Structure formats: C-alpha cells, structure tokens
Amino acid sequence: MPKPKQFLKESKKKSKHAPSSTRFFVRAIDCYDEALKKFPHSFDLAYNKARLQYEITQYPKLLQQLPGSLLELLQTAIESSKYALKLNEQNADVLFNTAQALTSYVEALQDASNATDPLPFLEESLELFQKCLDYQELQHREFQEQSAAAFAAQETDMDDGGVSLTAGSSMDVDSGPATPSTNRDIPLDTPSSPPAQLEDDRWATIVEPVTDSSLLDTILAQLRTLSLLCTLLPVPSGICPSSPNSTPLTPPGQALQSIQTYASSILPKLTTYTATTSRTTESQIAHSDYLSSLTDLQYRNGLLTPSSYFSALSTLYTHPTLQTNPEALVKAAESLITFHQNITFLSPTPTNPTPNPEIAALSWQALSTALSNLTSASKLPDVENLAAVHVLRGDVEMLRYQMGQLGFEVSRKNEGALLRNAEVFYRGGKNVARADGDGEREKVEIEGRVKEGVVRGLRGESVEGLEGVGGEGERVVREAVEDGVFTWGQVEGLGVRF
Image (tube, rainbow, N blue to C red; front, side, top):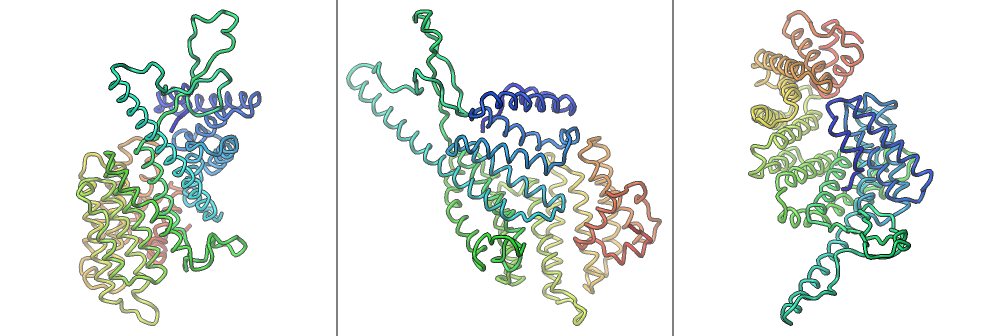
C-alpha cells in the first residue's frame, strides 16, 4: 500500500530515537492539515494524512511521546480515513486502510478492557475489506486483459515485420489537471513546446498493477478480522452485538453461519493466490488462526464435544513449513491453552467435585502439547519476544498445577516439580526482558517478576517481587486469576491485597 513519502522515510530512519521520530510524524501530519485547508478535495492529501495517522499507532515507542490514548489516536485515524474514502469510494488502498484501522481499534478496545461494543466495528471492517477485494480483482482482471491485448498486438506487429509506433502506452496521458489519486502523477517534459505552452503541463498517471501478493494481503486481513470476530461473539452466537440496545449484527442464530459463508468465498482464493507467491507460511498461519477461532466458537455454542473439539485443533498448524516456525508454534500452544480453559468449566462443580476423567485427560494432553510447542519455539533463533514465551511456559505449568488442586491425580503427584518449573520459567522471562533493555519489554518483566513471587509463596518461600509494581502488578494478578493461572484464595492466602 502507498505511504506518505519523505516524512515517513525520515521517521523510520530515526525509529530508534522516539522523540525525533515523533516530531517527524507530527510535522508531516501538520503539513497535511495545512494543505487540506487549501485543497479540501485533494484525495492524495487526505489519504496520506490518514495513512500516516494510522502508521504512528503501530509504534509503541512513539505512542509514549504523544498526547492521548491509543484508542483516541486510532479513532482520529479512522475519521481521517473515512474523509478520504468520501473523496474516492472506489480506491482499494483507502478501503483497505480504513478497514485495517477499524480492526486495530477493536484490538485496542480489548487490550484496554473498554466496554464499547466492538462488533459493529468488525462488521464495517469486513464490509470494507470485501469492497477492497472486489475492486482489486476487477483491476487485476483488467490489467491481465490489457497485457494480453498488448502482447497480441506486439505479435501481430512482429509478423508484419516491424514494431508499431502507435501501440498503447502504459501511461494514460491527458492535457488537463491530474485527477487526485494515490498513484504518482508525473509531469512530462516537453522541450519542443513554445515557452508560452509550458504553463499548461501534460500529466501521466502511472497505474501500478494489482498483483497476486496484494490480493493475498487483503484476504489475510479478512481472515484475521474473522478470527477476532469469532473470539468476541457472545454465546449463543446469534445474539450480537451483546448490548441489548444495539442493532443486531445478523438475525438471531445466523452469526456463526454468516462467518462461515463469508469465509467460504475467500478461502479458495487464499489457496490460489498463495500458490503464486512465496508466502505459504504466512497464509497457513492465518488460515489456522481462523479455524482455531471458529472451532472455539463452535464449541462454545455447543456444536462440538470436548473430544471433537480437541481433534479439530490437532489438525491445525501442522503444515510442514510451520513445524520450525516460532510464531506458528506459539499460536498452536495458545489454541490448546484456550481449549483447556474452555473445557475446565466442565470439570469439578459444587455438586460434582470430582473432575471428569476423560475431560481431565484431554486437558492434560492439551497443556502438555502446548508446553512442548513453546519449548520448541524458545529454542529457535528467530523467535520474537522470547521473554513472553518463557512467561507463557510458566503459565502452562501453573495451569497443569491447578489441575491437581481440582483433583487430577497425575498433576497432584507432580505438583512440586510443576511449581519449580513455573518459577524457573517466570524468572527466565523476567531476566530476558530485563536484559533486552527495551521499554516495550517492561510489562513482560513485571509480569514475570510478579508471577515468580506468587509461585515462591506457593512453594512456602518468602513472597518477593510484588513490591514497587503498583497498578501494573495488580493487573498481572487479576488477569492471572481470570486465566486460571492462580486463584484468589491462593493469592490472598499469601497476604497479597489490592
């Protein structure tokens, strides 16, 4: 996708220096604002401003230098994108960027635990992505037809013994002003023209062809948005949005079917465009992410048994290219952790305190496989955020430990080893994050530090690591309890109060 040019380049050159980079971004946005006051109907200006406003939200270091929250900045980017969209509703780039900003806004809502209903934003995002794909495919077909016609004309000229001097150009030339576009408008040199005519420059619009890779970009973005939608839909899936005062996304009982129908129109294209690019791994991960989220939604709606749920997950992330890919290994582990958290609710209850042996065995198998995947990922040289991987390994060991507290015998017999492993993993995550010296890893360091302290307490040692962490430490503990890593009884039993 096109991006604002000089200021964006300068900002990326200075990406290691947040204050300098931020000044370049802000200066560029201010320039676009001033220009739009003079030329409010310029699509180029509106598009570049919106693109830059969204771009800045993707750099956590830069966000710390800006006034306003991430949600506020994304909201501004969405408003600017929609302004540009009004100027050119058939531009695939601005359609894509607006949809992308809407999806990012929903992700930020979840991170901020904001109560705003996210489902209408995702519905709008999916509609815009589909319009973008439709226009891209139309342009792709037209380009292929033009290329075929040009090739045929060239073959005819060669058969006649020469090359046509009047063959169609790859540039559309006109003598009027350039139509606003994200494509580059370049004045043609006319040295033979009289001086008086030089003021009336002729322009050529260079149209970059839509490639299979750009089509694949859109399909992958659609799949990621569908995955997010699956995780956020309430149960039963037809009741959405969750707010009783909101307009339903689809009629009751049809949300799950609508997701599958939408996906069925793009999955064959995913295969087609992946085959002509070198992006197999990226496509396989996005496809598995979608199927994992869909399977989770189906189970939560009572359409799958625990065993069929587990069997479906076991077929994902299994493509040969993913076996040594750290991102795929981590995501496979996360899908199995989600499986455990979902079926744990079918284990002990006040009326039936004994866990279901079959369900408990599946849960233990899922967590054991998740731990193996995370261990493999941690040993790969290209793993991103190794500290977070170690912390997640600690979480898995604590989830296995908690199964013993619910009565699962295998866990109960090994609870000492499970606690020691968890402590080692949390400490490793804390130390790796600290060694990185990166402000973005500070939250991971605090998370490892707090969880290590709680585990030490559970092992009967002194509780350390909880001092001086303030609200961030409270957040870590509350989320850990919500995820089943700790219980409130365990935390309060250590004398920890918030």
